[in-house]
Length: 188
Image (cartoon, rainbow, N blue to C red):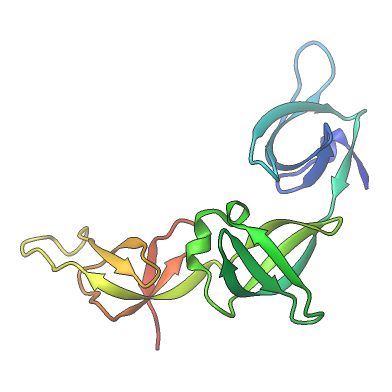
């Protein structure tokens, strides 16, 4: 779908210079001389590269819509991960690089959202939070103030996370998948 250059909004996905980009930031600029333009910070969907470009209202760009579908995580296969569409039973294999550090939070049967463009998977979106079990927690150091003290703990997937002093080994906690931080104690 063609749109005017000044109609780009943050979060829009556009095709520009033969690649797919997501608009991260925009700024309307009206210089003293010449016409107004839109300064757009773009991030490459496939490789993550960043670029700044100017779009005038007279220019048109191709806005792209991705096909988002729910898939179930099945199993890891080396550096690849296998997902299945629960409606069609179609299986998709995705490389670890596309998922990034969040791949450590994948669990058997977890539902994720895959975004496709012309049949090719582009992004994998995990749930915002997951419930993980603490397998190892350091002892509390006496004399620490309760307000700002956190201690290191090891999750069932091997990642380390900082948790409040009252969290012990065997406790299930909620972890943010975006940055791997402690959110709260899981409700059983």
